[in-house]
Length: 97
Image (cartoon, rainbow, N blue to C red; front, side, top):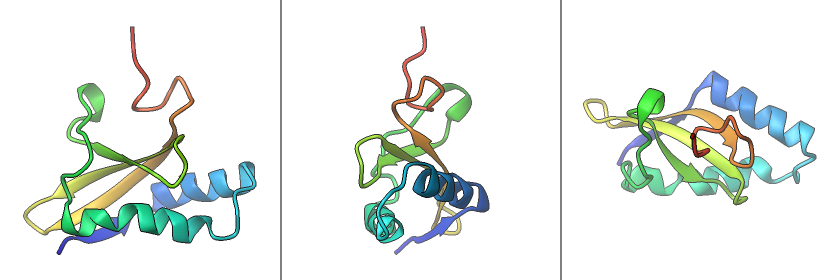
């Protein structure tokens, strides 16, 4: 079973979203539940290309919350590297033209 580690940057992103968007008190627990499947299926999320490769992502407890992660197979660790607001044009999942 892979170990899921939330990096300091991802923690900051999540903290900013919680305070800036007035998310509910159980937001962290909801996010943890969204990440739990990565323990068993660390390659579950679609991969991103370009400057984001080899990053993958899963959608958080809200459809706009994109949780970006990288899987290190040698150590069987999933590193959550950032949280993006999928509604933003600067999100890793935004379509570029």
